[in-house]
Length: 303
Image (tube, rainbow, N blue to C red):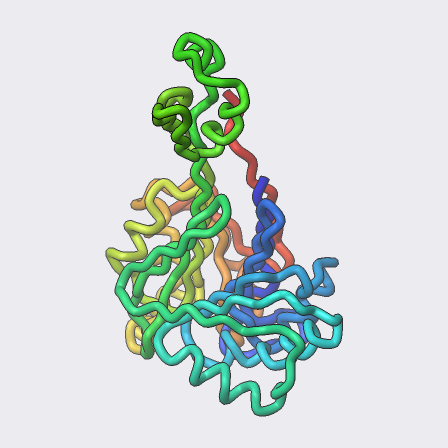
């Protein structure tokens, strides 16, 4: 089970009725936050979630609306007596940027670890899931992220018995471990069927449509994209400022074969994003004009 919550849906500046775009996901005891603009803590509290269990924070880029909430978030964690290390992931310059922000949060009771993205496409493996970062096209270096949870094949008890594999090894093989015992090598493929469908969530804001984004969004279960502009007349502005319109996001979702699209990161000048709902749904039927706190629980497909 993967819990997903779009904490805020605003772009550029927080508003009384719209927090800045930030995504939080919870899976297998891990909590992952992507972007941390001003007001993220309040949005999290409104959801009823706590920042204390967060063990990974990813940044798409270093514009203020995506990172300015970090010092307060770190102080909050420190005041809650956190001692576990916190991993930060982001484009080159991550440690320099965070160190600058920490002038107002200099002392923390926990360690900060840094993973800087150095390639156009880069993957980070964790316990049970993978984070894939992919370069997109904004006015500064910017990345989108895909979280993938792979699902191993079903354990074949009869096959394990027919191969005389000791019972005590079954659990480790089922978890994907290879074991050598009594001069014989036991591998997971000896007892597991073909890989089953897992879960995939893709998040990207502040970009023009790119091939890297289309590839990342391919067959994703949930695609979360910016819809900075809604009026077709603002298409030229989107190109100039390297953002996307709602219509472009919906078209990309349709082309990528995604199951569901959540729009986010609206311009502060867009008072009523719902006004564009019908237009967007004509392009991609399962598109949603998200509001702060939009949540979903993703589960593996039944067999």
